[in-house]
Length: 137
Image (cartoon, rainbow, N blue to C red; front, side, top):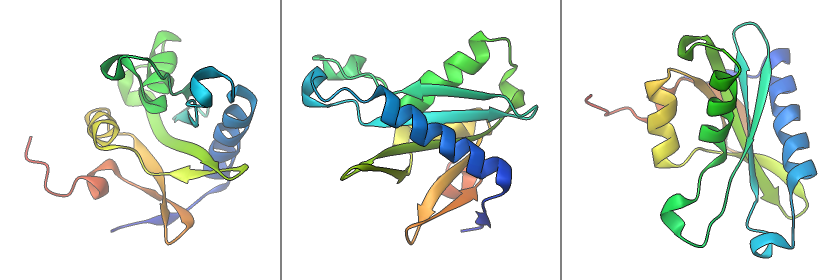
């Protein structure tokens, strides 16, 4: 997998996701089901947040990455202005980088957004194609 170490811009994006996760976590709602936060960076350097949305009906639950993408687009960004994404979740009391689920990998690929993922426990930046190497469409 072609992976790059994080740049200063990537580190700021990761810090933003960690802060969002910490500030938005509600242990009383769905027994703490909200455990994921995401941040998206545009090419201009603007940052947007998203959080996972649990629901009693599982199919209406939403991951954090689409929430962040929607916020960035709703603020007037074109799809091709979205540059990099990261999601974090709590491991004990510390928000750590988590890889996107399969559906979010597809979404990131559709929007051509690089993603920060843990590789052997260390965050690296990869292209979405690196996470879906055999995608045929």
